[in-house]
Amino acid sequence: MRQPEQFEEAILDVLQQRWEVPTYLELFNRTHMNQEGARVYALEHCVFGANFPRWLANITGNCPHLAARKYLIENMYVEEVEDPTIAANHYESLVDFAVALGLDRDFVLAYQGAPITRMRMAYCDWVSRQRPWLEAFAAVASGEMSRGTRMIARVGEKANLSRRTWDALKLDDKALAHWDAADEADSHEGGHGDVPFDILMTYADTAAQQDACLAAMAEFIAVTRLWSDQIGVWAFEVSGLEPPPLTGRQPRPVPKFALTA
Image (cartoon, rainbow, N blue to C red; front, side, top):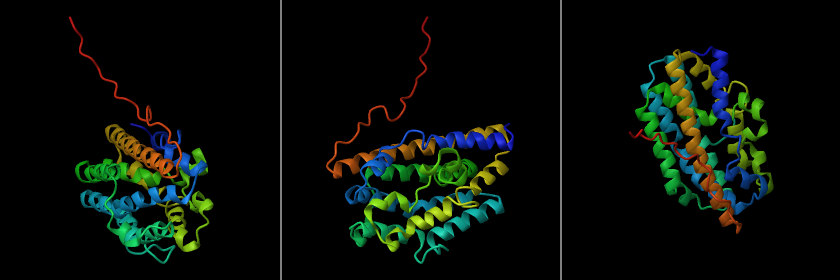
């Protein structure tokens, strides 16, 4: 079994896979940011954001530890009831961002997501319902953990998805309120990007549990990278640009062959 500091380093090693090679969405944002491409991301991310608290609730229902449940409930409260840093709640402010990009509010609220988004959501629904609570927590929380202070200290500001990402769009404060709230919630000391480390190091108290949590996190990051690459390709396309190829973006399975006599 890893000691706490060793487990923390192992977690960071897994999370770093999120940022080592930029996804095509991050490549687009860095080199070609425009309103048309941002709409693609905003529309799909609104669907994912609307469902994120449901997965936290699934994990909460399976968690036997009060301290961990209190954190999960607090996270859900910020998402759906009252975000202490902005007037609207977390999801409503994300919809405001999409509307500021020119999308129709009713369409955004009714939209169910492209197939790749529904597949990502189905994975999160499955992992949060079917896997042991700690593994499910490791998977679902890894998105926030990849933007926490520990990750930023390791890989730099590229792990901090703040309003600066959208500077080229010249949006007003209301349109960008969601990103101020996300920055405050995930990327500051003691936020949602940091607390999950403490929970994992407290309750993953065997080598098998630590390994299972790391595997779940790697799985979630692989799903997220696949989604981000596809959203990035669409952002390139809608901007009239040649999209980069998806060939080789995901590692192929390495099968083991049976020995023959």
